[in-house]
Image 1 (cartoon, rainbow, N blue to C red):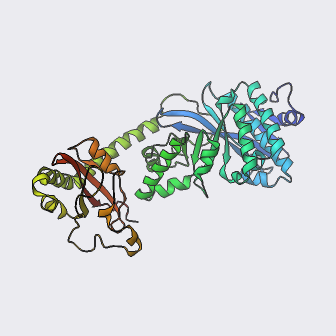
Image 2 (cartoon, one colour; image 1 turned 60 degrees about the vertical axis):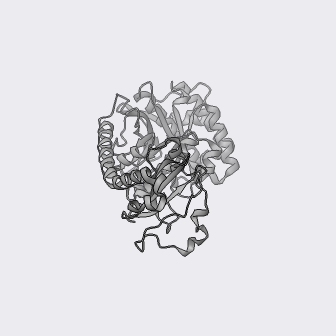
Image 3 (cartoon, rainbow, N blue to C red; image 1 turned 30 degrees about the horizontal axis):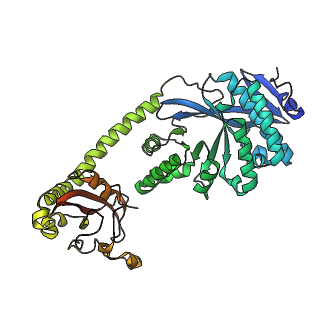
Length: 428
């Protein structure tokens, strides 16, 4: 039994469909001595706690029965035309398998060979034929996600035209392997992919460094601002899954959730694995809050004590106990415009705030204006309530720090009392 094709299909598509055979309840394709098969790996949504799509992955078996990589299969094809035909065959195979095994919901993620994606008329012809085939098989185009890697974007004009052609089909576009090489947010702004797939290398680095984990969280936030969902692939352990959830990615894919299999798993409700990871994250956050409280509370208490006596004793006398605490980088007070009301106070202990001569142009912080800093704005929004920042780079060294701040009425106007605390959370 051969796969069906639209009545107006082009001759190449008809020929390719004739190479598909149904074996063991699924479709396979034979090309020369090669046997091509579809495997599907689930893509899970953390908020929805279930599979929301499947990436189709090619599996290739040589004539001697040995499994070979898809890359090797494409490399041995002698011409671009042969690669183009094989690329179309793979998509035809995957779509046939997906519509026979998947339910009525869920995305199908399909990879496009980079050279084929930007090859002008051939790409347009292949897309047109793919649209007709997908529709004939009963899969709506809005359930299709076409993946393309960043490395084809060097061909800027061809790439823009290819993106426009994909947009006209009504499917979604995913930018794959973002962060693997010379990734550029300018590309995100230009093509507006609905989904950005972060490369596993980012996850691997972030798992070994709290500092890089914070950067990854900011990258995810920026991608969200660009209007893209973020998918983190290659999640293989529970620790990696916890980090993926913590940095607020939308979608995850990896061995910890499901390995590629010949059939789709089907979105059959909440994933027990994801529920367990949510539970572990809740426990980790509770422990983190307790640890953070134990670490910060001495500074918070000293700052509140200084707040109470600042209007009568002045900055130096009111903050002397606060300045004596270990790890304090500086104590300072700002007026309601973010300017220093007096010289900042520095600890007497040597070494902590030794100046780095490379950053000498950023000296004299008391002449600066800090009205745009989050610790200043939040304190003014809630007078009397102690605020705390995320770790960031201070000008003392420079070193990582967090800032505690509180707005205090002094002589009829608000002042923001601040303390910078040394924050070495990443020994590397």
